[in-house]
Length: 110
Image 1 (tube, helix red, strand yellow):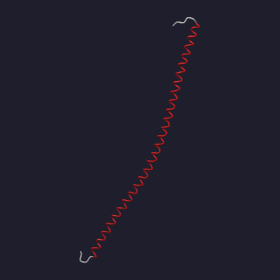
Image 2 (image 1 turned 135 degrees about the vertical axis):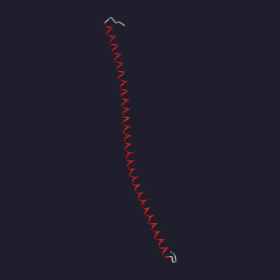
Image 3 (image 1 turned 180 degrees about the vertical axis):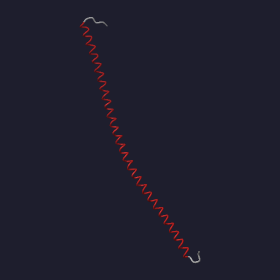
Image 4 (image 1 turned 30 degrees about the horizontal axis):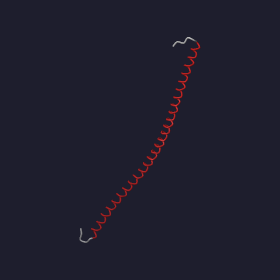
């Protein structure tokens, strides 16, 4: 399209400039909406990250407490087994000692 008159050219250029400005403004609004959406998603992800970090911390504390409890129970179990073994050994010694006395006190036995 060829425009020969300077006034028509000027108005044509103004019209194109306004169209360009409107398109630019629309694109700017769309980009602003995208930025706001991405900022919202970022805040959500940051909150999730914080919540997961808190949960991990609580689980690590719980794991530590459970390890302490396990170690205490293991120690107690070991002590009980040791006490049981000592009791069995004393019982055997008493039976052996009791049998020796019984054999020695019965007349005619040897």
